[in-house]
Amino acid sequence: MVPLKRRKLSDTGKSGTNTSGGTEPSKFPRVVLFLLERKMGASRRAFLSQLARKKGFQVEELLSEKVTHVVCENVSGEDGRAWLRSQGGSRPPPHLLDVSWFTDSMRAGRPVEVLDRHQLQNPNVSLCPQELQAGEPEVEVFSVPSYACQRRTSLENHNAPLTDALSLLAENAELNDEEGRGVAFRRAAALLKTLPSAVMSASQLRGLPCLGEHSLREILETGTSTEVESTKGSERFKALKVLTGIFGVGAKTADRWIREGIHDLHQLRASGQHYADINQPVTRAEADAIEAIVEKAVSSVLRGAQIVLTGGFRRGKPSGHDVDFLITHPEEGREEGLMPKVVSWLEKTTRNSYLESKDGPGRPPSNMDRFERCLSIFKLPGAAETPQRAWRAVRVDLVVSPISQFAFALLGWTGSKLFERELRRWAGHERGMSLSSHALYDNKQVNEGAASEEEIFAHLGLEFVPPSERNA
Ligand code: UTP
Ligand code: MN
Image 1 (cartoon, rainbow, N blue to C red):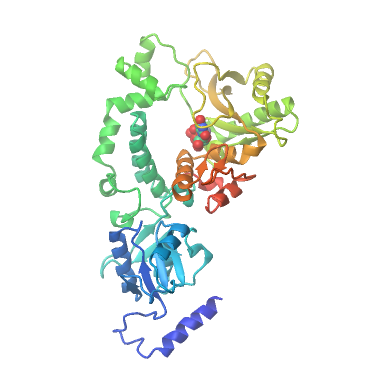
Image 2 (cartoon, helix red, strand yellow):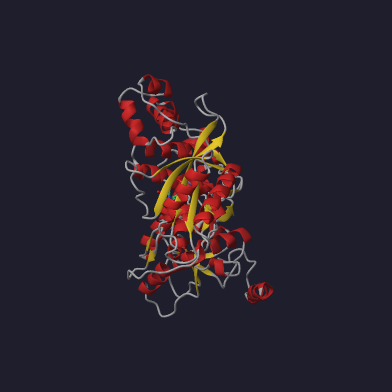
């Protein structure tokens, strides 16, 4: 297929009389581009148009019948086609493409064959090497779809200094109950995590979503920013970090303590308040050991019941702040009432590894779903804060789901948190659908059943992203 296409293109070249004349406006007379400004933005459109012209492409400012390739960025297939229809015109252009076709073509220095993944709705991270001006070194311009659930984010991060700085700002915003700012920083960090190489200059990020107002340029140039430094140095941030590092202490409790003048563990102890353990990371090996115990508990109290390790460990993280499990049974309804039995089995049978279950009053149920859930504490060997004992406490989140909702629960509990948020945002904003850890409703409130995560992605019009690539 490729040779045929090449032949066609070069045939065209030969049949033209003045392809080498230099004054010829286009090296590729069969290809006429139009870049859609919507979502791409005017400055990025101008930048990409100039780049294409430099490479010998013909780029039209207005949509006309001459146009053969319409290039869109961050636009869904549905929106793209709706826009085309709204333009009227008797003959629609033959190609309605994602910017990935454009960037592939820029890299190749010629129009590349249109592949499936270049069609709208099949977004892909792509690179666009380009010469800015003669003499300037070649830099890569990144192009990234705007929703984290359209991207693949492995644990490999080429921009850790930048994402660490942004994550710190996100954490500070979250600890101070500024959710909007927190999400903005998380989105920016997630976007940088997905890039295939280290960012060297702010110009490489031109026009990317989510990277607007932050002090990125400053961080890029100096390795840090005034905002990052002042946050790090702030007494309040330091106190919030220390206090929320205690088992079961959230931002609200920490904030109350700070207002009472308690800023560190020493002051907390002096105030006479008792506190239990400091959260220490759990390793994968520890998670596996806990999985074996939970597996035994579950299959002992209900034959055929199954458990799956979810959360960060399912995404391949080497450590986590807790261990998350999803429990189900292949026969709908058999899972009912399973949790109390599992908990009492654990309490009776594994007294030296199971400490307690905390699902009593005082602990509000998860606001994210309505599954039977139990926050348990396991004992693991290791350094404790108090010299009196030789173990430390580890949080284990147990969730029971009926098999009919299992795929949704699995997707919802695998994370990352930002990936989940972006999935729901995509479902709502781009599809008019509503996604939860229980179900997916389409725009007519019809429940779209699914037996696997793959089916849910398909319903959402997204390419499947495996758990290891959901580390946004
Ligand atoms: P975690 O908070 O355990 O995050 O929630 P994690 O990704 O495993 O990271 P660490 O390593 O433990 O810190 C796991 C996933 O479960 C979902 C969230 O979407 C999260 O991504 N979750 C968590 C809920 O759906 N409801 C909750 O109440 C808590
Ligand atoms: Mn977890």
